[in-house]
Image (cartoon, rainbow, N blue to C red; front, side, top):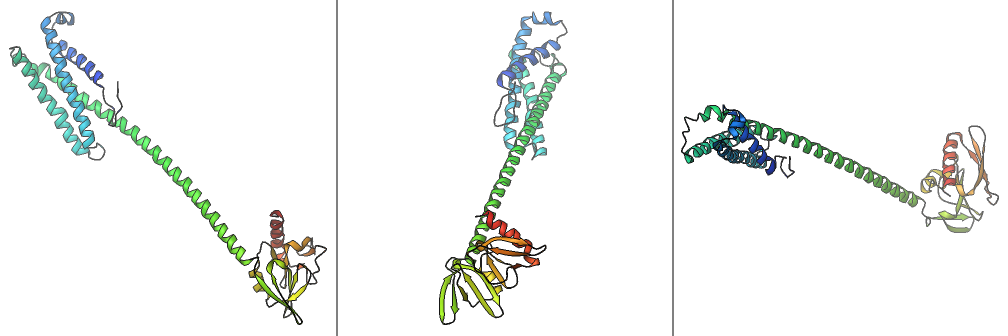
Length: 310
C-alpha cells in the first residue's frame, strides 16, 4: 500500500505495522529449531515476537522518516554521492546499531544472556537483510516516483512549449495584421481623399481632389487629367510621379503614358498578349487605351482584385 505526498511514495503506517509483524514472526520462528506450531505454543516465544514487532516497527519507521528527511535535503539525482553516504550511515549503520542496542535492552529487561543467545550470528543477519531490503525497496520506489514526476514535468513543459508556440503564432498573426494595417494606412496616405491637384485650361484654373480623378494621360510634355465630370485639365505631374501618388488598388498604369481609374472601366478586350480598356459609356477619355504587353497580366490581376473588393 502506497500513500501520496509531496515526497516520493513510500509505505503507509499500516503497511509498516503489518510488515513489522511479518518480519518479527519470521525472524523469531526461523531462528528456533523447533517446528513452528511448537514454537508458537510457547508463551516466551510470543513475548519475544511482541518485542520483536516493536523493535522492527521502530527500525522501519526510522528508516522511513530519515529517508523522507534526506529526500528533502539531498536529491538522489543532483547529489548522488552525498545522498548515498548519508543513506548508508543514517538508514543502514544507525538502524543496525540501534537494533543491537534494543535487543540488548530486551535481554537485560528479562535477565537473559545476550552472548549465549547467539543473536549476532542467528537473528542479526536477518535483521540486517530487512534493513538492506527496505533501503533498496525505498530507493526503487523513489526512482519510480521520479520517473513519473519527470514524465509529468516533460508533459507540462511540452504543453507550455505548445502554448508558447500558439502565442507566437497569434503574435505573428497580429504583427502581420498590424503590418497590413500600416501598409493600408500607408497606401491610404498615397490615395488620400483630400489630396488636391491644381488644373489649368487656358485662363481657367481649378482645384480638384484625387477622388475626382478618372484618368490621366501624358501627351508629349503636357499632362492631362480627366475628371469624373468629363472635364479635362492640365496638371503639373508626369506619369511616374502621379503613379506613386495614387492608390494602386484604384488606379493602374496601363502603358507608359496612361493611368486609368478602375471605376471607369466597363470591361477590357484581349488582343493576345496585350489588351484594350473599354470604358463606361459616360467616360469620355481620348487618350491611349492600350494595355502594354509587360503590364497586361498585372492589370488583369489588379482589376480582378478591385472587382472582388467592390
